[in-house]
Amino acid sequence: MALLEVNDLHVQLQTQRGPAEAVRGIGFTLERGETMGIVGESGCGKSITVQSLMGLLPPSAKVTGSIRFDGTELVGLPEPAMCEIRGNRIGMIFQEPMTALNPVHTIARQVGEPLRLHRGLTGAAARRHVLALLERVGLPDAASRLDAYPHQFSGGQRQRIGIAMALACGPDLLIADEPTTALDVTIQKAILDLIRDLVAERGMALILISHDLGVIAQNVSKMLVMYGGSVVESGSTAAVFAQRAHPYTRGLFAARPALDAPRGVRLATIPGSVPELVDLPPGCPFAGRCSFTADACYSTRPPATVLAQGHEVRCIRLEEIAAGEVPA
Image (cartoon, rainbow, N blue to C red; front, side, top):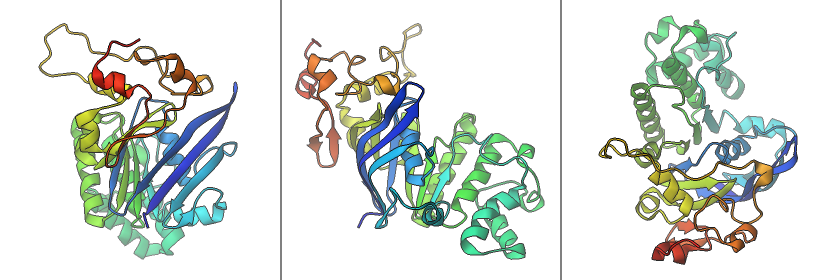
């Protein structure tokens, strides 16, 4: 049995313009110790997907489909039961280290909260465990800073504290939602190296969300490409990087800057912008922005086409794209 099985997941959010489908029938599985990345533009449904796994959606959100975690169905699970899983068996590193911590509580109290709630540790025992966690994530002078507040730490140090909090109870699944946002490149590398080492050390499964294709290439074994709340391409990281079958995947890769590009050459861009959720077409969510768009793309939901074992893509014009035909 897989650790995590997501099947036909739909998430409907209430907006000022009416209900909107933020996640549209996605599915994937994750084995124990396996690593998976999710990529896509802002607004494509990445964070909503992992928030649904954590039970952190707005009260007005409507969730259908199935999320099975180690055999337990999470969709519709009562909040007390969800609280037993959240922060205990599923840990999450949030994307903004400058706001993820509570400014009025000390670091010792915040990192120790999961230990008090799920492990019953208090007093000196909890403090010792917190210190061990902070030292493991490389927080400088951890012993003398247990009673410090978040504003007394840099962005990179706050993210290390957030990682310590997510790891406090030794979760089976770690979710990292763009964990290097707002950090400089040197700190980004240190944080990603730390997450990779901890995942390997503890045998956790990992879901890593990132805009950076290089980060995905170096840190996960398989990936989902999301657009408009849908998974448009999925497979092993090596297979997706090698073939790039969907036009959206190709657009993301083409937009990467190249170090050997001549001076003055403009970066390739994907035409248009991500539409509002309520404006997505009933067919392919990429219809309209894609240069291969045909009339059927607006109305026909693309089925999954298997290109190789585990590599799937959702596009009804794969033959034309593969043949290099002029878009029509």
